[in-house]
Amino acid sequence: MQKEEIKRPIIEVGVIGWIKNNLFKGYLNSILTILILVAAWKTIIPLIKWAFIDSYWFTSGAVCQGGSGACWSVIPANLRFVIFGFYPSESHWRPGLAMVILLGLVFYSQNRNHWKRRLLYFWIVGLVASGVLMRGGIFGLQDVESSKWSGLPLTLLLSFFGMVAAYPLGVLLALGRRSKMPGIRSLCIVYIELIRGVPLISLLFMSSVMFPLFLPEGLTFDKILRAQAAIILFTGAYIAEVVRGGLQAIDRGQYEAAESLGLNYYQKMRLIILPQALKIVIPPSVGILISAFKDTSLVVIIALYDLLNTGKSALSNPEWLGFSSELYIFIALIYFMFCYLMSNYSRRLEVELEYSTDT
Image (cartoon, rainbow, N blue to C red; front, side, top):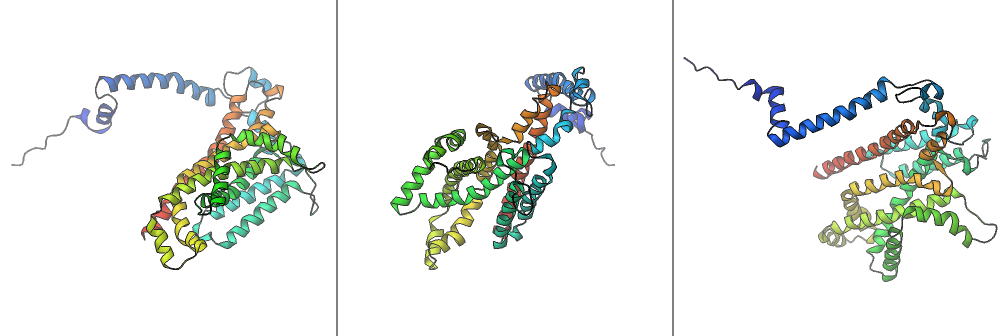
């Protein structure tokens, strides 16, 4: 006769068992669980009520003034201005197409099978085409002054141009800092330490106010070009230190093996050292690029209006006074979406490169 299997008490298995073991195991865990539940009840429930239950979605600002919920109507009412800013409304298709080109280049570049020389040409053509669409003046396009470039297109242009140019600059600076030639090494060290020792806002201020003072009379550069140069120089210095760390992490045997094959300096770096070093520094590099994407909001110091600042300008309309939270939440979600996609792609790229190395 078989013995009957003794079942565990119901309070120790299933959902009840998990709650007991993870949330109410001991006095301290029980007290913390109760406090967290009370805090969630006091904050999350009112937040849900404000954001969804009592909210307004497609009404006027006057209707929202008398309500207690969120006025999401501020977003559709000001969406075109927040996205395109002061760009002429009849030509909004041009910055829209420029954004499609930039995002298309990013999507195409995700596939490592496309990492060939022609990809560089695609990026050059795409960035030039985006600039032509924004500026106009040729091919029958109306000329639009750069002072009217604003909103999300300006944010993407500054970010993408900055990332594409800053990373090669950072690699060159890192190689220069490890050069055996004292002159080049000293120049790279001075540049990197000088740029990393000041905030980006100071570089933007200098590019806008001080730099024109050193130019000959009558010669000037566009404000966007000056802001773009400041972002590239600033980001490149930080990328240089990250890449230098990756170069130092490469075992000396890799250098000696490359030299034993008779490879010159250029071949050694391009084929052996840099591919390994850049793979190591993917996480910190992406962190710097994400910071550069968010730091484009600082261009307001030189009277350029990116996505964040066009949102601020939209709130100056008396009809929508008092509803800044809703609009800022929308803008924050846009920033989060781009930053999350960059972070997620970097993690996927790490896995792919690790797998390709193991195989």
